[in-house]
Amino acid sequence: MANEPNSEIMHQKTLEDFVTSEYSSFETYSNIWKNETKIYLDFPNKKDKNQCLNNNLKLINQELNWVEKNKDKIEELLIENDCLELAENWASNAHLLECAEEECYVMEDGQKVFFPITTDDFFNSLYIETISIKFDKCNETPLLELILLCNPDYFAEHCLIVDIGKNKSLKFYGIHG
Image 1 (cartoon, rainbow, N blue to C red):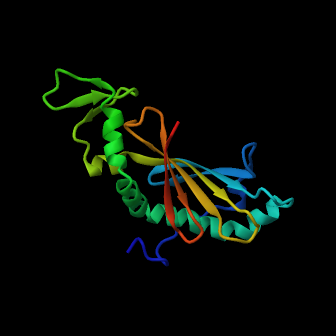
Image 2: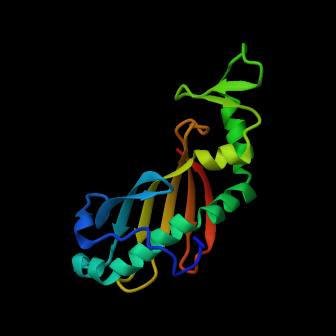
Image 3: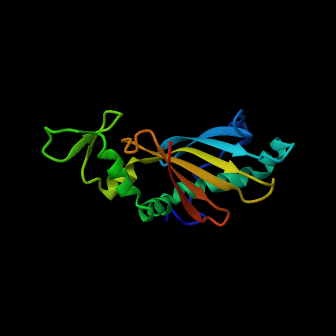
């Protein structure tokens, strides 16, 4: 079963995968939810950031695997926070295609969106553009921030933000852009 703790390891980043970043301590890419995702890793209060990366590499991989395996929990959070309705509200401000048999809008990216947007369509559109992993101390569970986008772009170049706490508590921070 995919959600079991000892199931197949999906993400196995090595030290060589991380490069120094001008925005955080390190950055890399990983394929999460079938999409290339930018990952920022930050050890803001540490002088020896390379040692912190080395000490926490296993934990970083565990966190990435948790995000990969728990898309359903993140989707549930977005539904609980009315993001499907929010997607329809934003999308209905796009150009209405009058010649279509069904209610259809053309998004800014040129893609057509038919109404009502189904839960499956919404979930299938979601992808993580960026994950920020922040350690306040070198050897502790980090905080994660997910920047989510949709394809088609229901939210007109705006993103959804979800934080994952140290105990895997999820919090939706709204739409930004």
